[in-house]
Length: 106
Image (tube, rainbow, N blue to C red; front, side, top):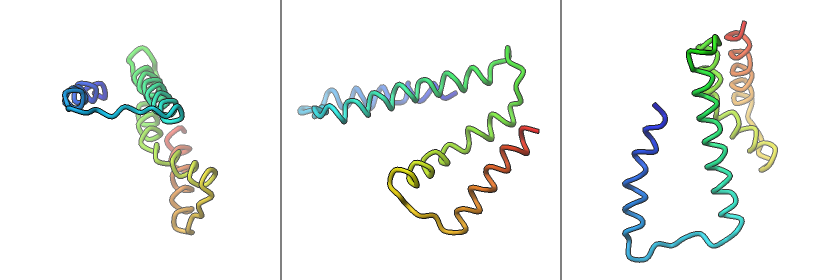
């Protein structure tokens, strides 16, 4: 049902295009990251639908649990790129998330 998001975005984009003075991104770095975001989001959506398709006999509970942990990527990027520090309770949460993936996959 994730594809419905695209239909919901169409009126917003149309409304922005009708606006008297739309401001488009002119910075190449912004264009690059925006395009990369769209491409990787599309690849992720296609991979999710492929994993959940009835032709594959994969465990849906594992796929659902792993995809629900997508904020884990943001946390890991914040640690590596932004050099943020985690508190002990946050580390415990990350460990529980990793253990949950292992338990579901068994």
